[in-house]
Structures are given as structure tokens and as C-alpha cells.
Length: 127
Image 1 (tube, rainbow, N blue to C red):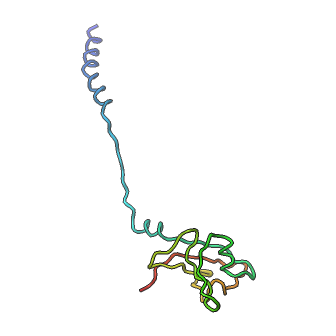
Image 2 (tube, rainbow, N blue to C red):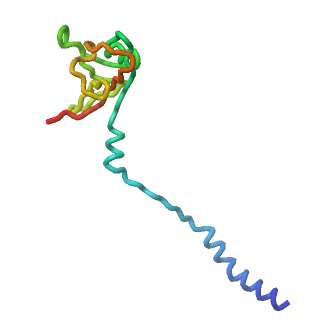
Image 3 (cartoon, one colour):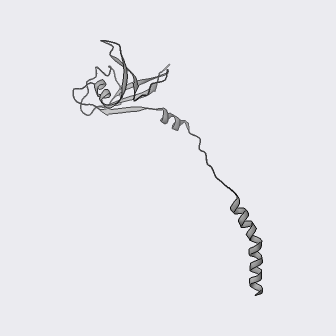
């Protein structure tokens, strides 16, 4: 009997601590600051598609994505202003890339081949 009385005393002494601990609101929050690499990746936009024998890159771009261009007429062709609603900032442009290399002609003049990888990358203007 004496043993159960001691256990009861200990239980009654600890009971308020259990209620007190249960009423505490403890939260843990971890905040991770984005790194420069994360921010760069988030800002970098790339749209790509495969070439199709005999079809120019601009025609394929317009088939695959919502595109806004400005036509500068014969010889200069169309300038891409926006792809999928993304417009470059004043220090950026849509770079036209063919098989990993900057194109040497405009997208309207480049006739694609099967297997070509065409990319449009949002890039900074070099100063």
C-alpha cells in the first residue's frame, strides 16, 4: 500500500507539469535563403523544340508557343519580343540557338533539319 501511495504522490506532482507542457505552443521554422544559383535558375528561361526538315525555325516557334514578334521587313525579318508572355527586361533578349551554338542567321531564314535542337534563351545583353 505504501508503494502505491508514493506513486500517487509522484503522479500528482507531475500532473501539473504535463498540463503545462501540453499547453505550450512550440513551433520550429527553418528558413533557407535562396542562393545565387537558385535565383539564376529561376530567372533563366529556355524554350526548345526539334527541327523539322524544310521548315524555318520561326514557323516552328510559332507552332509550338505563343509568340509576339515585330516585323522589320525584308532582309531583317522578325524580332521575337515575347514567348509565352515572357518579355525580356531592358537588358535582356531572346537568343536564338541552333544545336548549342548561337545562330548566324535569323530564325525566319534558318531552315531546320530533322534532329536540329532549336532553343530560345533569355540572356543578358553584353555591355
